Structure formats: C-alpha cells, structure tokens
Length: 515
Image (tube, rainbow, N blue to C red; front, side):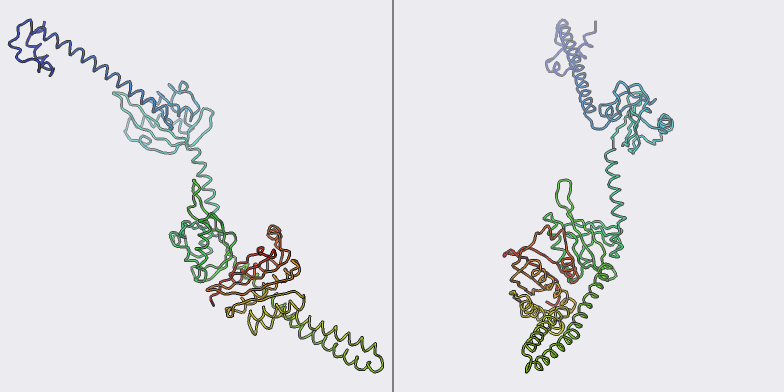
C-alpha cells in the first residue's frame, strides 16, 4: 500500500482535486486513503478515454488517407527497400491493368520495360548505400509497361518515407499518352506551318503579330525576331492602311476574308502583290482571340498576267487602228465608186443607178459600224479627253448600235491618276455592258462614275434577265475572270449582285490617291 504522502503527491497532479483539497494535513488517515482511491479511479478513467480518443483519431486519419488514395487520379504505388510492392491504389491498377492482389508482393520492375527493369534494383541499392539520388525526389518522363505488354509514356515522381526503422518509397504515376499524342499532332502542324513557302502569320485582334513562319520571313524579308510583337501595319503601304481595320472587324464578327488581292511592302521597301486569306482563331470555348493570315506572293503571276493583258490591249488598239485607218478607208473608196457609178447610170439605166445607190448606202452604214467598233477597240477619246468622256461616247454608241437606252451619270470631277487605271476601268465597263446586252438581253443600262475621298467607284446596272449567283460563282467565265483581274490590277474589288429591278449590278471600288 502506497504511503499517504505518495498518494497525496499523485493526487496533486489533478488540478480539479487540488481545488477541492483545502488542507489535506487536517484530514484523517481514512479520509486521505479515500481521497487517494478517488484520484486513482479518476486517472484510470481519464487514461482510458485519452487512449480511446487517440485510437479513434488514428482510425479517422487512416480512413481519410485511404479515401484520398482510392479517389486520386494519379497512380500511387509504395515499395520497400527491396523494391517489393506494398500497395497500389485503384488508379495505378487501372493504368497498368493489374489487380492489387497481382501486384502486392511483386517486384516493381514488372511495371518497367527493358533496360530499366534490369537496372531498377541497382538504382535503389546505390541510393541507400551512397545517398546520391538519381530518381528520388525528381519528376521525369519514363516508359511504363502494362500487363498486356504494351508500353506507354508516363510522368513519374518518387518520394522517400521514413517509418521508424523502415524506409519506403512512394511513386506517383500519371499516364501522359493523350498529352504525347496531342504534342505529336501539334509538332506535325507546326512543322507544316514552318515549312510552308506561303506566309502564315498569327496576329491579335488589335493587329499585333504573334507568330511568324519561315515563309513569311522569305516573302516579307523580316525575321521572326523582328516581327513578333510588331503591328502588322509595318507591311502595309500608306494608300492601303484602311484595309487592315476592315479585315479585323470582319474577323471579330467571325467572318473570313478569302483570296483578297492586295499590295504589301517588304523590308527592303519593294512593293509586292499578295493574295491574302484571313480566318478567325478561336479558343477551346469558341471565343475569337486572334486571326490567322495566309499570304502568297503573286508578284510573278501578276507580272505575267499584266504583260498578257498589256499585249491584249495593244492588239485591240492595233485592230482598232487597222479598222479605222484601213478597212474604213477601203469602204469609203467603195462608197465613192458606188456613188460615181450611180451618177453614170442615172441617165440611161434608172434601175441600175438605184441599185448602185443602195450599195453606197449599205457601205456607208458599214463604215459607221466599223468606226464604232474601232472606237471600242481603240478609244481615242480615252487618251485625249479622259475616262468620263470615253464612257459617255461608249454609251451613245451603244444606243446607236443596239437601239437600247443607255444612261451615263458621273461626277463633274473624277480625277484618274493614270492612263492604265482609266484603261482598266473602261474595259471593265465594256465587258459588263456586253454581258448585259448579249446575255441579260437588257433594254436599259446605267453607267455611273463616282468619286469619294481616296476612292473611285464604277457601277453598271441593267434591267436584264439577271443571273443565278451559284452558277456565276461556279462557272466563272473568261469575261468575269478578266473583270476581276482588271479590278485587282488597280487594287480594287469587284462585286456582282442583283439590283432592285431584277437585273445585274456590277460595282468596282478602287483606291484613288488622286481624290
């Protein structure tokens, strides 16, 4: 039996009983022994409660940890110092195709391909012997081997855990097959973009360059380092600066710009013809975040087309001159001879004289038509008096030749900066009018020539049979292609649409620094 003093000292450890004891020296021996028993009982109950709470807390912690391991997306595997698997969570089982029972107790090397399989135990032994970590605490990409023998790429991170005198290693595994496939696709497309001879440029919705491929560097003369972060306007000549805001506005609306013919400036200052296609760039949520621009240098093609067109125009002018100076003169001679013959036959052969007069009249009509054709092929008025006068004369000739009503409206002052632009606009009007007469069977045609600051507009409208938009876009006859080419030659655009009267309206809009 412990002494009263020992019991009292043990009791004093409980603050509650200390508060209850006023003066234990005044107690009797029996009262002191009773108090000691109470203290023992109190401590026994408290010790039991604390142990129970600690056990419950440990169980709760274990359950929480188990839930985390079971629901983790990453595979988690623990091994001992010999490389023997002690646990594998469900994610690890799914990744490798094994059940937990098939893995526990096996060497971790069964999840590795050669040569890592043969070297793994050496990695662990070397670390335990030297303390030099080659794979411990370092995340890296390695290959794993599934139960079916197939290999796959994975991210592996290994950590060391000390449990008393034991050392465990925990591996965190993530299957990155999908990511690797995506990277392959991206690398493939990146290689295609980089190897393209066409310029492929990415830019923000504000027009700043975000990507620049080798083709762009070749076409425009600027390196990737020089262009990334620069505004695309560095490539745009001053008289074309209005194009970029209009293109970006279309991109913001989700529209594309297809095969837009324009001019751009290289780093060396040389202007080149380019065909541009611009499309919106969208993020994974479908939001428009930028624009993708594909540009092709068409300078060589444009030069060849320009030369062919110039040859064609020269040939038309030559034929026009030959008709006017050659055929018309010969017809005029025939007319004069017919008139002389008519006068000689008149006194004796009235019928013969009448026939000679008919011949002279028909020849005169042929001369008028031939001169009209000559003026169409070689419009002298275009060279001497300008585009407006040439179009006005063309409208009058049209009425005389075909008997249809043709009206010409124009601004009093429409300056055209060059004879080449005037020629292209005149030929374009000729082709549109010819289509209205020959294909649309129009009886009324209107030609308009207008000018606004920086722009010149040529419009041709008719009341003919109209057209099928799908057919005209798919057939694309030679006349239509030449009209579009002429518009592109002067930096303009050509639109063809139905007008309010059911016929066709052709509109050419071209930049004009002269205005």
